[in-house]
Image (cartoon, rainbow, N blue to C red):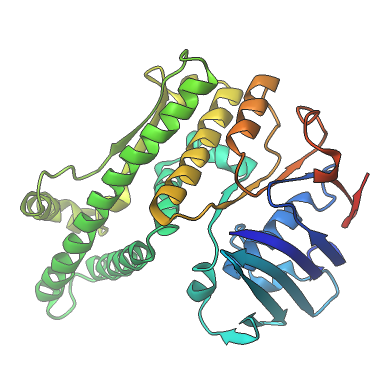
Length: 359
């Protein structure tokens, strides 16, 4: 699939702008605060009816305006689909070929997107919740049933934690047993799925990183489950063994919500020992692995959104990235044309104060 065009009206700092996209590279150059990230956000919003910044819909409406409108054409195989999203005050409407969509997941099924932003570096630098979100997000992009399983787990976890804080409630033990039966089934299912896909993604990312560094750097992803049980019965037993701790701290101490993923280069944690450039290369190669996984599982070429991607990458790493993006529609923002000398000028646009123009 690929996105043919996009029309923005009152989206962020764009009053009205129309963009025609190439099927391959689309490079948007501009200084900070001119609208580069906003453009990528609009493409993401067209596909998801939500922002990757996890904000309210009303926050994307241009200042002093009361409504926003996005319209775009996407090509899937030989057919074209017209997508329209309107946000007015707190109301949102989604239409595809004139038919109203009541659920965002129906819209998301049309698109395959892979997104990189500078904030992705926090996946390495900060806590395990971001690394769990990384793998969960990749899996959800190719398996919609996983999203429901994870959502159901989070719901039961929340309810179980509320119950633990109210130990004097009637039928406490019966309720806790019911929650435990459900949460262990969901948790073990998530554990097996995560373990499977971390291995695949890690192998892909390792190959990309070896190619990038001429074999000098080995990038590895190692899944670290909180409950590394060999089978379901063992998982249940290990989970229930923490009951005394759960009652002491009034929260669920064990389970997939405590898992982590080790990311290392040459056996050393990237969080502590890798340079900023190495950390950025590691995350980019994980995103390239996501692109490859999406193609192998779904047969679709994802549309790739890369924000400020060349910052802190040397020329070799920048050229490697561009080489591995061939065959995919790619929308890239950058602050300058460094590393883009070999890109056709008609694929480069410039953004100044919410206005997009060719050179």
